[in-house]
Image 1 (spheres, rainbow over the protein chains, first blue to last red):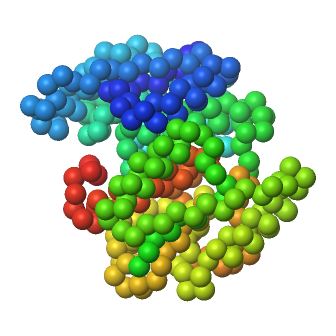
Image 2: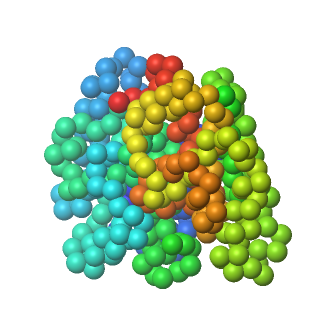
Length: 157
Length: 157
């Protein structure tokens, strides 16, 4: 079972990219982790927000395999404590055997087609985080989940 | 009215410190923002978690003025959307006139004495974020709140 983080557009803030790298390196010790960045649309400036969402959505859908378990990072998704989320991730890994793909959208969010394809939605917060920094916030949380699953002392109650 | 972010211990991750700097610089355009870091305890390795919390708590309490509006960043606090939090911040600024101090604790959280002094608690997420990165997640959120209050186009619905 592989875990993929699929994102739209590059991380342009240097500090955020460094944070991503730190947690991605740590994740390699725990799981087959893969990162896929869909390139930013080239003509975005000439498109409406809705058109950007649809075009980015098409690229997201193309990057998915039919049996991937697709989880969108979305403010309207389910919220969990770190402990509960680690438990839910562990259950998935033990039962379904499907590859899991977490998707972080672009600045304007997901198209309807992406919402329809998704198997579930995860919310990191009721607050909106910059799509530049949400990626490594998520990566830290994924790393934290594995340390919880393995009973390692990173997470303090 | 001033806004202070009071934290325990330095940010040791370079990328996180860069993120903090970015949002602190941006905040200067909107408000009188001040950052206060309480130094890490020197003998922490010889202390229990409870002792660390109590000692850090004493230092936090010393750094507060009697009439500060003290808001702890705490997983068990109130959660808001970015829009609702901006509105609540704006109401505070218009009505109370008190200086607001947001406090991020150390790795083991707050002592009982700090909980007793606090006026309210704010939760950024049900999940636990590293105390190294929670600071700049909060700073981005504070910056976002000011752009929302001013009607600026940083925040997309």
